[in-house]
Image 1: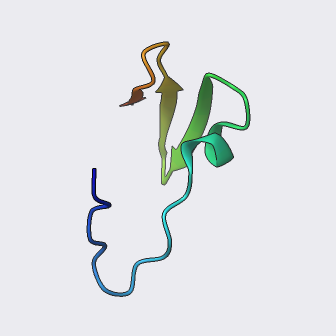
Image 2 (image 1 turned 60 degrees about the horizontal axis):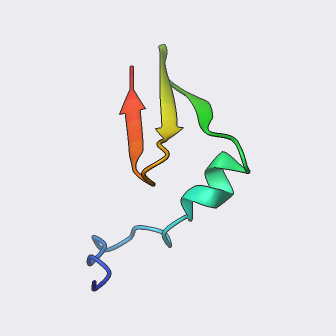
Length: 49
């Protein structure tokens, strides 16, 4: 599968392993909201508020 083109001015992609660092879930604060990024056993990512 080909890598999607990034919009101009965007940085390099970050591997999910780099974000999760061996965990199955990380919390992300965005402004006043808190999100959970979860990796499933099937290898998918789910972002929930």
